[in-house]
Amino acid sequence: MTTSTNSEVESNSEDIRVMVVDDSAVTRWLVQSIVDGQDGMRVAGSAHNGIQAIERIDNIKPDIVLLDVEMPEMDGIETLKAIRKKYQDLPVVMFSTLTEKSASVTLEALALGATDYVTKPHKEGGREAATEAVTSRLVPLIRTLARPSHLKVNYAPRPQVQPVRASSPSTSGPTTRTLKINRIDAVVIGSSTGGPNALAEVIPLFPQDLSVPVLVVQHMPPVFTQMLADRLDTKSHLRVVEVSSGMRVKSGSVYIAAGGIHMGVKRIGAEIFATALDDPPEHSVKPAVDVLLRSAISVWGGAVLSVILTGMGEDGLAGSTKLVETGGTVVVQDSASSLVWGMPGAVAKAGLASEILPLGEIAGAITRLVQAGSRKSLRA
Image (cartoon, rainbow, N blue to C red):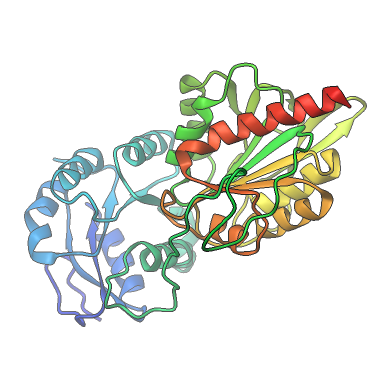
């Protein structure tokens, strides 16, 4: 393995070229040891601050940049802005710590065009635990976000699927279910990679009089979910909070699952309360969409609308399958507007979605379906 992390290194022409920008030599070494140990990817070069990164990026020609949040001379935000001015399509993944400051800066970076983020491991966990924590998140992300056209890896290309609305049958791609107007008592939204920005486009568009609660699982660690809820709350007509166990679930509010714990719901008399479920991770994530969907079905039955947005993996597929079997409704984000069409794509390909829509139409569809279900309930 090449030990230098401060200069460009030789790599196979078909490898994914990773650039690491971090002021910590230990972090640069950790990332290089992980990346260089994988087939089909190499650290092609690095920099210890943003100024050096901007100077070197043309020579390194990376397929993806891993960018530290807090650095001297030029921090991650300013470096990201400089990269985006010249390289609009270059994937940039922020590398941040589990602190309130880093979470806030990371969310700002995502809003400014960062592609995604990876959290740095806890120092107290030891080298082996740190390596495993970074590897499990970073390697799949690199393979998904940085795929040169010549690279042959075991990842199917993202299908281009035309939006499918309730009024227009599908002519290509995954088929959709016939949309039935069902009563909707709750909305469950699931998202992962690209989710923070997707949620920032959807949730602020909900009307103030939305007559059902909205429960959200975004794959994020603790601290980040609280910061996400706070940011969405300032932009939205509805109250947006990070959920805590025992919190009453009310219509007209949005509840973000806390990082590191599954969210559930339970009925006590006529009221619904949030619960914390400390079960093992599912799909290697915690919280998981499938856990929340199962819990929501146990409370509301088929009167649930499942909305699956951009994200890696298949979290939400099993829960949406069970929801459809119970008589519920599923809407997914389309391929073109998804950063990663993994979660919504899995649901769409299974034929579970009643509508496959661009991100800009998701909030309107949710509102429309909730209102239509309310009118049907009143007529009944």
